[in-house]
Amino acid sequence: METEFFFPDPAFGIYAIRGYHGCFHLLVDNARHEAVLIDAGLVGEMSQLKHVLKEHAMDWSGIRAILLTHGHLDHTGNLARLKELTSAPILAHPLEQPHIDGHYPYTGAARLCGLMEATGRHAFHYRGATIDQFLTPEMELPYWGGLRVLHLPGHAEGHCAFYSDRFDLLFSGDLFASYWFSVHLPPSFLNSCPEKFPVSLQRVRELNPRRVIPNHYDRLDSELHRRRLQCLIQ
Ligand SMILES: [Zn+2]
Ligand SMILES: [Zn+2]
Image (cartoon, rainbow, N blue to C red):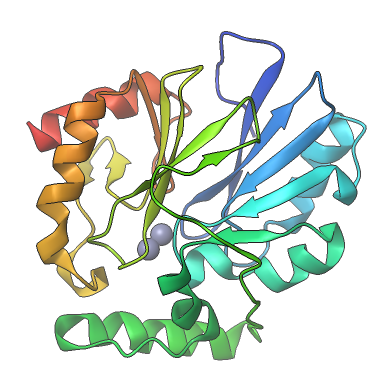
């Protein structure tokens, strides 16, 4: 299966590691012979990730950091295992630690999300992990030619996106989902603080990135996802 996003600069690569519930991403910096992960998937994706690393003659130690958009189970299922294999630090917003630990006090409609996660944690023998470095808004990260942290709450209190100025590309986490039959904000039962969506969406409108890569999508086409997001939030 095709995993690599089309990308104009051969020095950098984006690989989608696809699982049951969506994707997470391996960003490769070929010149520095290193990589960074955005999110960690749910279950069953590790062999795909290993395969992509092997194609780049890299082992687990080539992964320099694990960045989390947020702490929902579909983004943290492999987190503990990946931290052990790579020895890489986990970077996330501090408000996501209770999600990672499985202790977030869901209220209202989002209690369904908590129930689904509890079931998943049990079924997949989930193990949590500790955030090593807290993400803060507008923080500049030294990975993949530079990534800036955008704090975009709504789906989760500590939900963050990562913006590459160099490629005008936003890794938008679960800000929206992008499928040809359905482009949508996350359904209400998955959102912990939906009242914060308008400010987050306004932030993305102002940024107006040329390329967007969410975690839940169909095609490996970042400009298509940008067009879909534009239609959704205009
Ligand atoms: Zn989520
Ligand atoms: Zn998700």
